[in-house]
Amino acid sequence: MDKAAPAVQAAKRRMLHFPRALGECSAQGSVYAKCVAVHPNIKAGDCLTEFQTFKDCFTKALKKLR
Image 1 (cartoon, helix red, strand yellow):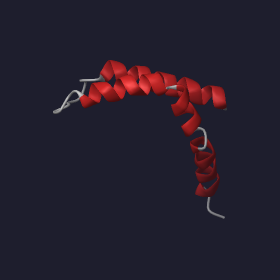
Image 2: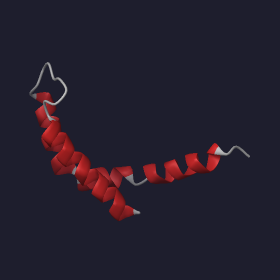
Image 3: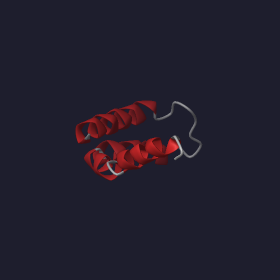
Image 4: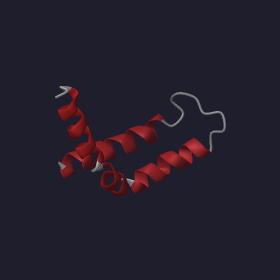
């Protein structure tokens, strides 16, 4: 049996939580998406605060779902 198989299986299980975690962070995701949408020539750092808020929410939501 391939040694990577258990890691792949664990990753697939974690991915099953993504839709629910994204749903819990829809407000933060919307704010981030709006920021990106208003920058036609977006560059690194333009929406960093919004992204970090969204990322923090998503990470916390995933931890709660474990």
